[in-house]
Image 1 (cartoon, protein in one colour):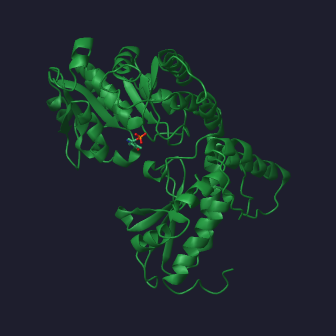
Image 2 (cartoon, protein in one colour):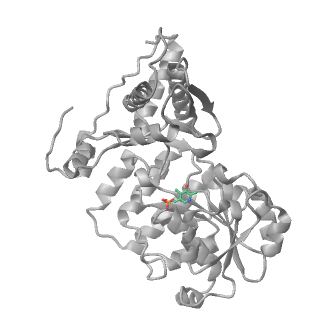
Image 3 (cartoon, protein in one colour):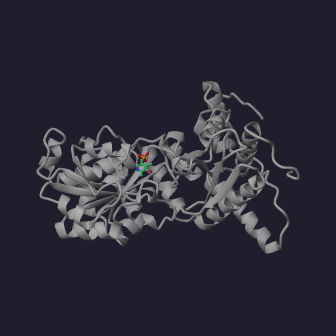
Length: 432
Ligand SMILES: *Cc1c(COP(=O)(O)O)cnc(C)c1O
């Protein structure tokens, strides 16, 4: 592989010298219609997974930092996503300009509200910052209360959250100055639990939409109905709930939540340090008062001009992408992997169709000598590192394909086969 240690800036190099790894997955010839679909999906692979850039690799090499092939999903700690090319272009272009940040912020947010079908929008420094700002707005509904945060808590300052929805990320709620009050328990949550927790101190209910937290929790419409009876706003943490792009409208306009936050650095493919707060005009308006360019409580979570126009370009592209074709492509790769691992003793594969993109669940048993956690660690220790998930509940691996180029998908299955060879008997005879 060519190693070019040139000094051109990253962004310029992405613009000028993008290259796409050649497709290495051989596909059988099919009827011409299927062929058309394959070609179409190869185009989709390039446009919506992103191009790998030789320039990015050379930065990593200079820093002696390993590249990660991401077979998990959008993980903030793995770099989030590959920015959409249109988002990179927009961010680079605006980086050369001075502009009135109030004017730019207002224009971008107005356009984002239109594009997503919401009353109002605010670009935030990640979904976590969007959550914090939404809680601030729910607590402090006048400028005096806003100015006093976080020194003095308003009368309404508690935020209700399912016990099953607690994560390390809910510190963003406390950062606003709010006090978290749990309702329900680890096994089940009833309407009575929620009703009992709602009182005159309640500022908002935060609902985590990720299906991972669904077990033992109330559904969103039930929570919103109870909140309405008490006049309490509902804020949905929908950081990773894309696709479908319809979710940009569904939680707020559809279900009636007052606000929803999305990560700009996940499937939207905007700048990694961007997020999207969507919802009712009054609440978003207060959040805006608290955020940069104003010097409110959100000022330390600056959103730069690059995040603003980068995220806008990413959303403009996202709503036009054929996400079903993306899902079909990734399902096809997963099926191919399952076939390649099918005849190995001690390797039990199942396709997980629970999420927007399929995953391959792999359980290991004798004669494979390594545990799934050990295989995960071995893959992550390589160069490039290959990131796969270890799923505690099944003591197995979960491997996905939707963020991989075709070349990377081949690399992942080869590395998995190699790891299994090294940790047990080779594949049975007849395997190619
Ligand atoms: C990723 C994620 C976040 C954080 O998003 P950032 O954009 O990194 O701030 C919050 N909540 C959930 C459920 C997430 O998946």
